[in-house]
Image (cartoon, rainbow, N blue to C red):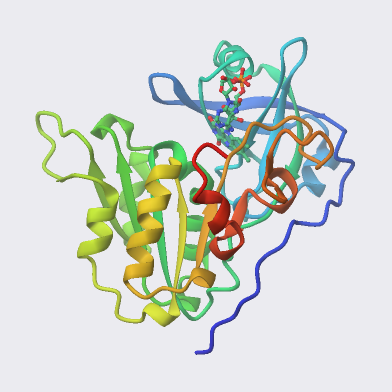
Length: 290
Ligand SMILES: Cc1cc2nc3c(=O)[nH]c(=O)nc-3n(C[C@H](O)[C@H](O)[C@H](O)COP(=O)(O)OP(=O)(O)OC[C@H]3O[C@@H](n4cnc5c(N)ncnc54)[C@H](O)[C@@H]3O)c2cc1C
């Protein structure tokens, strides 16, 4: 199959990007200390009916009197009626969010940003590599790929966390595997009772067979150092730069390319990203702390 070099560009905005919609917390799951998943539903049925998103996109969550934070959508794009966000407590907004209970209201504007290339890799093998909370923006890809499982070759997820307790969405693993996901986990530090892999996620990548590198697409999200080593391992296994996609985070304010907070070289993470094809950001990723 020939390489396709289409990069999914920034999604066209079909909504007023400044308008924050009222949403409610419908369900709340504490994933681990300091990290929770909030399923949000719109108060307005018409807004709920019109809202769709693509895997990899994010919303700006707004807590009146506190501020806004960019948070990836971690749900199933085929079921946009309730919109999960997996959030790690970091600062003002996320700490305030952590105080809220089921039924509480907040604001949401979005969706924003570019998408993972789930259509580009139809017919090929897909390799997902995630670290820690970086699985959240990739979970919509898992749902989308498994919904159309017959359109893809091998689908593999390599997922690393610091400890077994840091592995997100553990109650879904059996279901994902039963639907055709080759799924391997690893942790930096095992605990008593952990019988799985110990080590960094790139070790899993180095060990796995990649029978069709020219038809394999890599999507990776996690700490930048993890993505960097993942990319080097993939390049060594003969994936081209055009077959590698990463999701980048930068401090974000407006989400519509005006404020410049998330500028990354010539790119705005909010408009051109957060999902980038690697050849577009390689030179910037080499610059430490850019
Ligand atoms: C596209 C995108 C998607 C994201 N998705 C998620 C997600 O799914 N779950 C999640 O928990 N977080 C996510 N984040 C990160 C989240 O937006 C930040 O942690 C945000 O700052 C939290 O807001 P706050 O008010 O709680 O913390 P703040 O008070 O804004 O920040 C706390 C500290 O983190 C620093 N900081 C802020 N943003 C970043 C950043 N992007 N990278 C490094 N340091 C930063 C600040 O300078 C400050 O020191 C995402 C960010 C982006 C850009």
